[in-house]
Image (tube, rainbow, N blue to C red; front, side, top):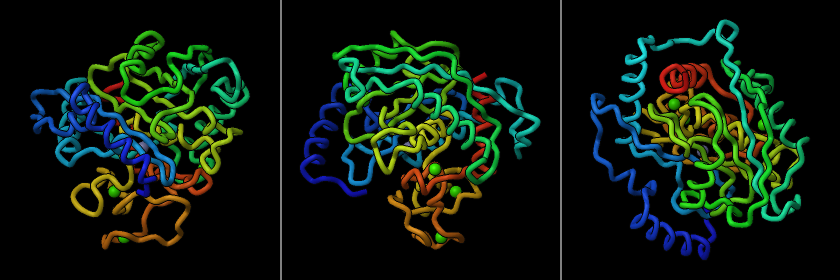
Length: 317
Ligand SMILES: [Ca+2]
Ligand SMILES: [Ca+2]
Ligand SMILES: [Ca+2]
Ligand SMILES: [Zn+2]
């Protein structure tokens, strides 16, 4: 990805600091391979960045080791619940409606500083329902979304929301609602040029669980070309256990989904015909789990739908 060199220098310093003082993604990457029996997976975080955006460390990067540990954990968690691995999804037979709680964080109550209107949130829910139903393209997944409440907070100390900060953790601890299958979404201005980040599902869901989304990326927002609501679509894909389409690059098991062609690196904009790996198929630039513009991404695959349903069965019910 492209980075502003000055911003990247600052970000590198921040990365060094977080490595020392907190459980940063770098620290997580250093965790040795976990056996399935240990049944423990750290809660890594996945994100989406703007083209040219700097980031502390691309938080989406999961090492091959960690991906392998997570696969073993998924199989173990399904077994522990006495559930069989689903091979294909019949969406009409398995519609799961996810309760959604919105937390709108604002610095001072103005739209410019986070206080987005209800209309943007309602449109976001519509976009989520359409994207996960395959209305814009791709397959229909099992998932639909139901808005439970919109909670507003004017609190300068929480603004902007700083990725992996003690403030973010404390805020979520105070605000998170519902059980393992309740989707808590936090909106605001974000650190590190990030569009959003989300937690992957784990056996023991904590108060850190949820998705953080740039407020102006919601439909009708100002974050063009990322203002059609697909940052939320993407982050919720992570919340349901999907990796980026470019996870692992051209080699290995990639994103652990067989029907998404391997992709060497994130795609930005909408590069038609991009083909960065020798494996069959052009890069999946229209997939919600790439980094392309919102107008360019419009599909999930059958393999992703199956992966999400298995993760739901393993971790969120
Ligand atoms: Ca794949
Ligand atoms: Ca290819
Ligand atoms: Ca789209
Ligand atoms: Zn991501």
